[in-house]
Every structure is written in C-alpha cells, then in structure tokens.
Amino acid sequence: MAELVTIARPYAEALFRVAKAGSLAAWSDLITEMAQVAAHPELKDLAHNPSVSHAKLVEVFTAAVKTPLSVEAQNFVKTLIDNGRLVLLPQIAEQFHELKNAQEGSADAYITSAFALSDAQVKDVVSSLEKKFGRKLNPSVTVDDSLIGGVRVVVGDEVFDTSVRAKLQQLHAALAA
Image 1 (cartoon, helix red, strand yellow):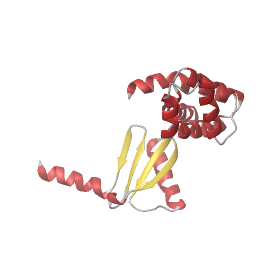
Image 2: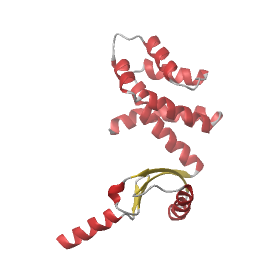
Image 3: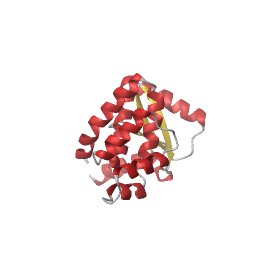
C-alpha cells in the first residue's frame, strides 16, 4: 500500500499546484468525483485491459465523469492513462485533499456515532473537537450501532474514542490482566 501512496504523491502535488492557480474548491470536488469513477470495478477492468486503446479509455472515463473537464483536467487524465496510473486516482485524491487541508489549516474528521446526530449535535461535536485538535475540521458522520453509545472520531492518525464499546473493551482488558 505504501508503494501506491509513493507513486500517487507526485501526481497529487502536480495537480495541487495547478489547482492553487485556479479554484481549489472546484478542483477538490472534481478530483473527488474522478476518484469515484476510477474506483468503479468496471472502469478498473477496462483500464487493465490491454486491448483498449488509451484514446478509448480517455473517452470512456471523460464520459463517465459528470462534471465537464477543463483542458487541464483532460491533460491530467491523459497523463494518468498514458502512464498506466488511472487506477491510482483514489490515492491521488486522498493526497490532494491532505495538501488542501494543510494549506487551509484544517483536517478531515471521521465521526462515527452510535446514533444518528442532528445538524445541531454535529455542530456542537465539531466545535468541541476543533478546540481539542486545534484546527478547523471537515466532518464526515456515520452511524455504527455497535458502539452502543458515544462517538469515535478519527482525525488523521489521531483517534478520540468515547464510545461505550471502547470503555467496555478497556474494562475487559483491565479485568483480564
């Protein structure tokens, strides 16, 4: 996995330099959409098929992306396809978003809750987490009822787990020791 990240990094950095000259938010949305298309199993199969020409693959990929591609985006896609790197778009998008967050002084926060949270609750949780982590957070909320109660938050490589499941696991470990 580390190898894919290493290969994707120069593409993400190059794309980020181009995006800084234009609209970073628009590029962020576009690279996310392109990554979703590139991750589709049928497109992966097509990309790995040696009988499909690069021009045909560009045509199919461009048609699959709903957002019209600028000249720069088309050139980026062609470069990826010519170098056999189209399937790396999800990793490229991930690194692109990390670069964008670093520039903006923010981070992605993956919040998993035992119960569905209202918008006001998410806002409160994000507000307190921003104080804890010292930066603006872009929340992504999911529900996992196996947590029993509480929330589990992942920001980068930091985990903040206040779930009942985590507390029960800690108690079990303490009793088993």
